[in-house]
Amino acid sequence: MLRRRVIPCLDVKDGRVVKGTRFVELVDEGDPPELAARYAAEGADELVFLDISAAPEGRGTLLDIVERTARRAFIPLTVGGGVRSVDDMRDVLRAGADKVSLNTAAVADPDLIRRCAARFGRQAVVVAIDARRQPAGDGWEVVVTGGREPTGLGAVAWAERAVELGAGELLVTSIDRDGTRSGYDTALLRAISDRVHVPLIASGGAAGPADFVAAIRDGGADAVLAASIFHRRIHSIAAVKEAMAAAGLSVRLAPGAAA
Amino acid sequence: MTAGARHDDRPRFAVVDYGAGNLVSIEQALTRVGANVAIATEPSDLEGADALIVPGVGAAAPAMARLSAAGLDDPIRSWIDGGRPFLGICLGLQLLFDGSDEDGAVTLGAIPGRTVRLVDPPTLPHIGWNQVERVRDHPSFAGVDPDADFYFVHSYAGVPAGPDAEQTILARTGHGSSFVSAVARANVLGVQFHPERSGANGLRFLANVVGLVRADALLGGPRAATVPA
Image (cartoon, helix red, strand yellow):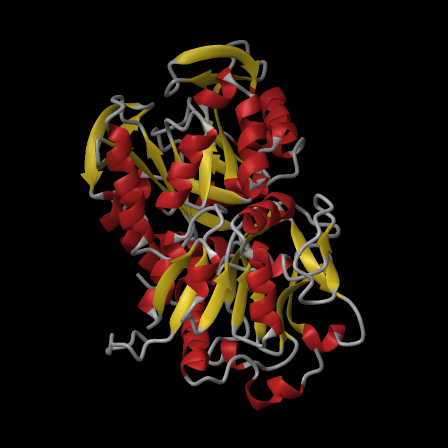
């Protein structure tokens, strides 16, 4: 039976792991390959790197980090941030990533999803959707550029379109909840999981094991992603998985993935 | 399991690079378990290799086109026909069959059968950790717990056909209807999961493969030679 995945997310800026609240107020949390190896050893099912470097020269640094991580952590790695072309995606995969996540660039150029899927297969294409709840309580709007720019796109409609174009997986972040530790937006997750059949990764707002269970049970997510609660050792991955197993979810209770 | 000795007694593994994604992981994982790894981009790169690995993710038709453009398709067929040790991973397993329903590609034809879409999957692609239920023993899984999880990322899987189909199947995995997640036939081994991304279990599997190649006993031992082609 397919296991529910627990995925630590490492936001990388200029070669360091950072984590902010709502994509701002960044705090340095460590060396990416070092943290990645620690998470692999603790039983992380995958890793996600999101490059939030503003400067283009951050790219070389990122590829170096990806390669150093792939040499140490023998679990899957998804890399997002700044991928704007099939060639960008090729470079990231060649450095040792297994999947690439497309966000702002896919909103600007939806056909990019199709081109990347045609070249590398849809299983390698994750579309990341940052969603903000509409003030009127009427659905969610897609926002881009690190959550700063509204797009006018409905999050559910964009999710369906992205899957039609070739997304093999969706990473859905509630911008309202991100970094707040107030729980995932399970209504957002459910609205999307009811409409698509690709795996859905829940992101934004995790505070503890009960939130992971809710994202899967109530939100229909296949995987749960979190950052600060792992970086700051508020919860260990093993403890989260044990709690998920105790709640009746199928998880991989690893004896310790080699790192 | 890491070999202490790093001399010329390491078995030489050629990993085929045909632009189908991440090679760092498989190269590193094999090196970690004692193989001498070289990336092969053209036929002459296969010379001197003890074992051949075709990794890869994605669709069959562009993969076959790139193998063909690099002049590697026929050498790979000859390698397999010659009974030499071969491991196909994910797409590299699917390419062993006659063809793929994904895009109608004609593939290597080393194992009778076709690659078809997963049947009744709750989600597609099938992404994540799942169990590999062995239907017979094989030395490549020695020491791997029967319930061990391996990492998958795919939407299609091979279905062996012909009189030897059942003997070819090594393991199955459930995601909707169960699919064939490992095959072994003569000196050819194929796995739908990614051992290089499956943590300690995957390294164990690869260490077994390296050990079998080192002992010149891949992949099925003395019986291998008697399995009809």
